Length: 242
Ligand SMILES: Cc1cc2nc3c(=O)[nH]c(=O)nc-3n(C[C@H](O)[C@H](O)[C@H](O)COP(=O)(O)O)c2cc1C
Image 1 (cartoon, rainbow, N blue to C red):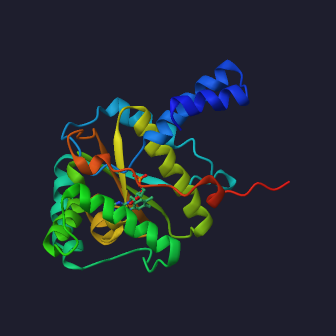
Image 2: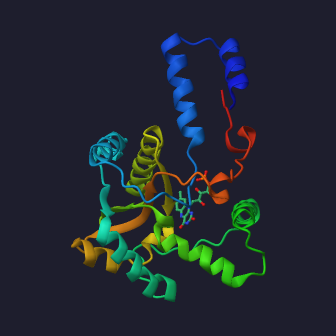
C-alpha cells in the first residue's frame, strides 16, 4: 500500500492518531521486508542483535511453550559451516530433520515459477544456463555474503502446531531485523545438513533443525535485491464471513 492508498484508507476508516501512526510504521516495515540475496560483510553490533532477538521472542505460541531455539553463527564458524555445506549440501549429501517432499501444482507451481523467473532474470541467468543456475544456488550456501546466519531449531517432540509457533517467531525476527535497518533471507536449504550444524555447534540430537536465516546489511547495488514477488489479491486469499 502506497502513501496515497494509506491516506484514502485512513479517510474512509478514521483511526486514533496513535493507531494511525503505528499502522503506517508497521505497514512500512512489513511491506518493505523482502528476501535479500546479497549482503555487505559488515557485522551487526551485538547490542542490536540482542534487541532484535528479544523482540522476536514476544511471538505467541501454543500454551506459551516457546518451542523455538535460535543459534546465531558469525565469524570463523560461519565460514567453516559454509565450507562444509559446499562438500555436503552442494554435493547432494543431505541430512534433513524434516523431509522436503512438496511438489507444487496449479497456482502454487505458477507462483514458484514466477519467483524463479524474476530471480534468474535479475541475475542475468538464462533459462537453459545450468551452470549459471547452479552458481546462483550455491550462493545460498555462502549465506549470500551475510556476516550472520541463525539456525532455528525446535525439540523433537514438536509437531505441526509447534512448527507454526516457530514460523511466527521467525516472521517476528525478520520484521524486527527490518525495523532495525537490517535485511534477511529465510532458507530451507540451510536445513539440508542438520547433522553438521548440530556437530559444529555442539547441539543435542533432540533438537531438530527447521531452517536458517541469513541476515545483515543489504547490499543495495545488486539487482537480485530489487525483485518484488507478487502476492495473490485480497479476494484470492481472504474471505470475510458474517
Ligand atoms: C521457510 C522459507 C524457506 C525459504 N527458503 C529459501 C531458500 O532456501 N533459498 C532462497 O533463496 N529463498 C528461500 N525462501 C524465500 C522465498 O523464496 C521468498 O520468501 C518468496 O519468494 C517471497 O519473496 P519475499 O520473501 O521477497 O517476499 C524461503 C522462504 C521461507 C519462508
